[in-house]
Length: 440
Image (cartoon, rainbow, N blue to C red; front, side, top):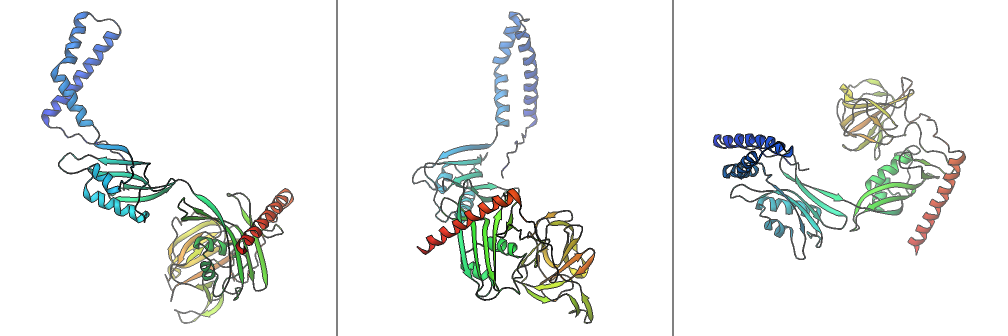
């Protein structure tokens, strides 16, 4: 964002003399006025004061100093008229052609229609030029709808950058369902489900389902989720998943979001939380490439105990924390390349190795939530190709993550259970109404 700076005052020696004289006169004047206020001055002294203030040199010096300290920045509000264009407005304020061109380019990158909203105020800050050159743009806020502004401003490097500011969003509830042909991701994308909703959907079911081994062709899914749009009805972001259903390999699993936005969870129809200590797999869209146990090492060439599970996936595939906890290390681990270790509680720890890179902010001491992206698949360290090496450590011992029996999540009781039942019934009614509308 643009910051105003107090301009420097460059004075010649002659100007410095005048400036010092002005300060001296000002100090004398303060004392004289104080004497007048206390009524301890005679008429002769009053006349002296009057003569001093009226002195032509004093007046010229005052004008000179104030001119020097006047800010070169001008801030205006301009009422956009019908037929106005961004270029026309900027030329009217004598902005230089280079800034006008860059501003129009940045504006068009956010607004394909290239129109501005007549009848609304446009905010503009520019720096006046002290020479024959034109003014330079510092900041402009352009309304394109009643709830969306495009803000263009100078960053720390001095270049013009832009940002879309959304003041108001409109929430819609969407119901998406489809059959799985090849993969959950492909089928969900075909049903026009947003990518971030797909990731959250996979995270929720990651406690119950191994997406590499459990999914079969013609399995079904259904998702009720929130999406946010601007007043042009353009998608901005996704909200929460309210309800999620999967029919997988003759199993039917229904999950309901329950709780406030700070402490919600997903529960089955009996009020039992789907969340366990750890997810079965911390990555989506991968295949099991090397199981836990004795194997011939692909690089060293001899049999060696493999104390983890390898998942082959394209480079850059997101890796999730399989459980909530604290990062105890995020660094280069020799043969493991870039790796992260998370302590979940006094019993469980997990390790993720050969990462291409870490997610932003990953370092020792950071708290992570189950399903949070912690890094991306790579092939760093002793690796023959992009994959994730995943380890689960229970009470200090490395175990097979695919055969680990994890403790069940919490079960709702008493008042919470009653509130959940009411919430579940309302959600079921909403889904039935939406399905009926889709049919009709």
